[in-house]
Image (tube, rainbow, N blue to C red):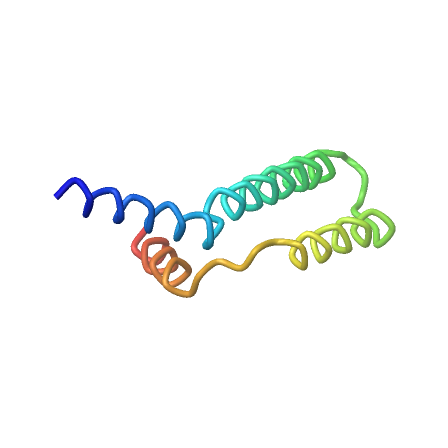
Length: 89
């Protein structure tokens, strides 16, 4: 029984290393923080009295596009579950 548990633990550890869960989670945290910074920048621009011009909006759009390209993909299963959850509210 002890041998089986040891083999199972080693297999699960190898699988976790192979799938790089911690690395993927860190990428998601980094991208979320950058999206948060962009959101705050947009909120700041919207709070200004001046009119939003193309010169103000274009750099934001480019930053969002770059971030979207760098962001890790969300698995379809997770995306679908989130969409269903948001539709209920």
